[in-house]
Structures are given as C-alpha cells and as structure tokens.
Figure 1: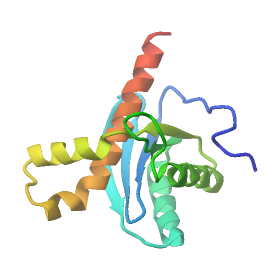
Figure 2: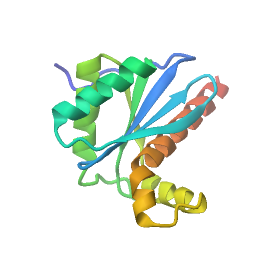
Figure 3: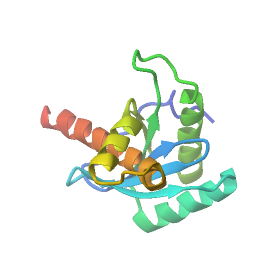
Length: 158
C-alpha cells in the first residue's frame, strides 16, 4: 500500500466535521471541528496504552462524530527539522488512513503544547495535575484550529 504522505494530497470538502489528533506515546489528544464554522473544540484525551485499545476508542469517536477527514499534528523543531516523534506521528496518520479510509491531513504542531499550557493557565487551571488531564485535548484543539484557520485563508483567496 502506498504511503499516505507520498500519495496525491486529498481534497477537503467545503463542509463537514473534522477530528484532530495530538499524538503522543502516553496519550492522544482529540479535538473536533467544523469546516463550515471554522471552529474547533477539545473533545477528549485517550489514555489507552495498547494500540488496539487506542484504535477502538478512535473508531468509537469516528462513529459518533462522522468526520469527513482527520488532521494529525506533526511535530518538528522550530527550525523545521524533524523531531524525535515526527516519524511516529506520520505512521499514526498512515494507520488512521488505512484503518478508517478517511483523508488524513498533516498539520504543523510547533508550539501547540506550549500554547495549550498557557491557555489552560489563563483559564484558571493552576496546578499541573489539573492542566495535565486536559492538556493533550487542548493541544489537539489548537492544532485543529490552526488547520481550520489556514484552510479558511486558502479558500478566501480563491
């Protein structure tokens, strides 16, 4: 099967739901967003350790939200060079595409966790324990919102 990254880029419809993912080895943050409104919201953080349990949880989210596409944050260093998790995130994106047959879009996730941390602190979650519980979903929201904003900007030029 060809690598999703090497295939022709998928096209995004004008409307529909997207699910965004902030992949991590311990947790996966998930956000939902709408193409028509251009708004993303944090949904949940998956804490399952096994791949099977993670993909079952993702399958439930896909069945519930019925997205038209998925967005996966791809970490890179500030200078654009690959991060130690870059290849793992691309593999996760390929697995999502292969398992669910939905278009998967990569998204630059530089500084999304830092922005999520600051956002949660401003929201009044002062303790690390409080923030850690929702940090990955908040980072997924920022990744997806950034993607939606860029998509809206691209289409406004057409």
